[in-house]
Length: 358
Length: 269
Image (cartoon, rainbow over all chains, first blue to last red; front, side, top):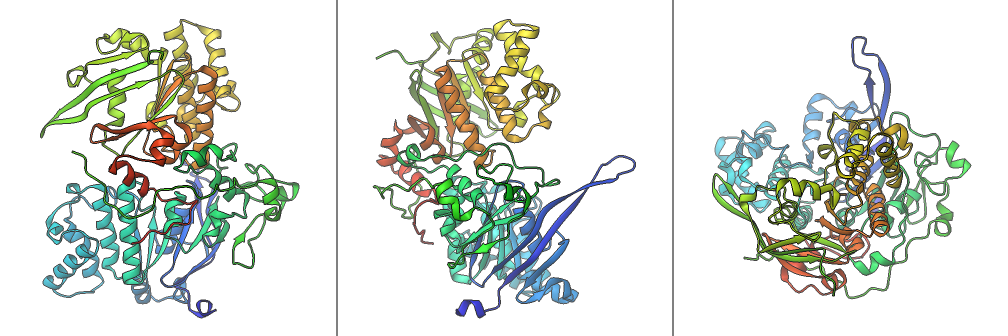
């Protein structure tokens, strides 16, 4: 395949990010290690979107932070365009890091309230020397605001004057200011109302098409991930359990993904009434003390003896759909998917503006 | 037709702020029938939570006007503070979105649960302790007896929400109001909580008002739904009808905005 010969934009090789936990107090002994990311290998090709899903505490945000350099890798490698970050010189690092930017979840916490929108977006342009001279920077800021569909006149305003959706656009413009190839999007729309969510998603998809961006799209909502992703990866307790194309949600090959998909509500009462939920018992185990064998075994309804002792490895089927589950071949018999009903009259997904009542 | 359990006519809530008056709820009327689940959906600021806070008497009286708020055989509009305090918890239970801020962090779970029995049912000591253990078992908190001594911070998000539900249903209320009860939770935990709620509802025969912005959750749990926008009800009906055939443009665009993971739909940028 042609794609396979291209150099991946981002490659993670057996990435581990561990956080030591101290007891606090006078002696402050180290009393454990949280293995937030524990051996993950992934790659993103230019122009592609990898969607990363998982529940809170599974390590998906830490993975994203390690990619942009906000969390330090304990072992393994972050390789950007064929070059290992660890082997780069400081100058190389600065220029490669510029190409990997981030959008954060909370548009209220991620913009400095004392800077104007223009300064927030202009700062990375100046720092990286992408434009020289005040006038050129200002012109670039206006360009970027237009790119995210905000009025250039907003450059003099402060973050508090904007709504959540508008702030998220400012966050996107700030990331674009560095002229990146890859943007790590950490739950970029989960704080927004669904109509605003749809607008921001549409903007991100248009920007990807126009600018040839790649996204590492981290979210817990299966719907948004499916919408934007070429490939989908599912994380559980610091490890990858499933990875593949969009068929990951259609026909999951890991017991956890099946449970996750079956628990996600579908906005259609007829389907909802017919579905059989796989209700998992208990909470996510403590990541300081993960279970032996398969990490999902404590909550898995079909765990066998082997699952309790041997950690499963990721195995890819012919369609490049991988799962790390010992019982992947028995899933259809043991955890049947609630069959999708015949396609009834569903609402056509056409972009339409949210009507104003009043 | 039997009389509605809760009947609200022309409810309006105004807030006075520095920039003048805001009408948060603007002439809302609806009924809740015995045993049914009614969902109130809408985006942030649409007035869905404020509507229920007004019904519960949790807002300053000055801003709340209505032709009629009739519930649990009483006129709630004119009920005094003492009367409302007796109704809340006893006849109307309420669950809020964030279980960490709605539980008292300095009291044990046991203390907060037994308080319900002591205040509303006049039970004491061993009887209320037993009631608390039974409740925790009912909502699926493991080793209930020992966990009574724990504080809210020692519970996970899902477990805290179970405790909140236990408190809300302690006195077997006729009406349970759940304001975004699963929004702060992961989807596998959300599925557990929703199952508990429907189980309790059929066990106690409660009517439930579920406030939610998640149309998926609403589709799964509700019989009837109201769609709110800028303080008004813009559409109401049976969930099947509203989802299959939304009448208002706003409802249509709201439904279309929800990305589906179960369908092969493409969104055009």
